[in-house]
Length: 165
Image (tube, rainbow, N blue to C red; front, top):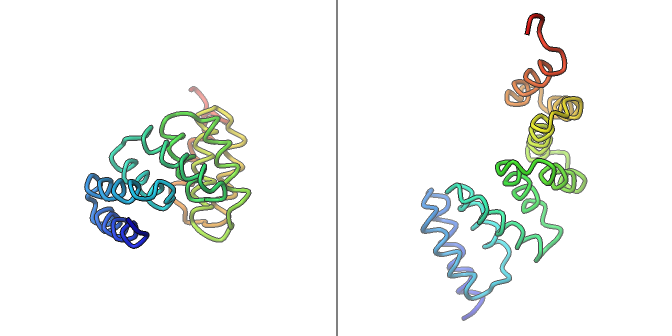
């Protein structure tokens, strides 16, 4: 088996992933990984497919495999942190988002969403000031960021409860 075959399976898997056929995409990612178990793009996107199927622990394993193959893979870090948030592993998620935010460019939406998702972790940990600070940073990047505005309202209610509550 050759690299061309790995690429062929990977491209087919990506086509199925793009069409929303997650089970079929996983089948083709697995075909690619059977040939080259070190092919990190297949591990990462298999994790994305599993995430869409709500197979969170399996997705987490895929993202951790990517990071073990390439510790500098920022998107795998982001994906891992996101799955940890879903699994309510808030402390681990915060630590993983910290790594991502330190290494990732501040210019695009992934940075803004990482700030927001990390703020969600802090909200769930009842660390409201940390959540507020992160949300303000996210909203500074995009003042029309509706999810950020909504979460900030929730956080501020916790900091300053309304009278008679």
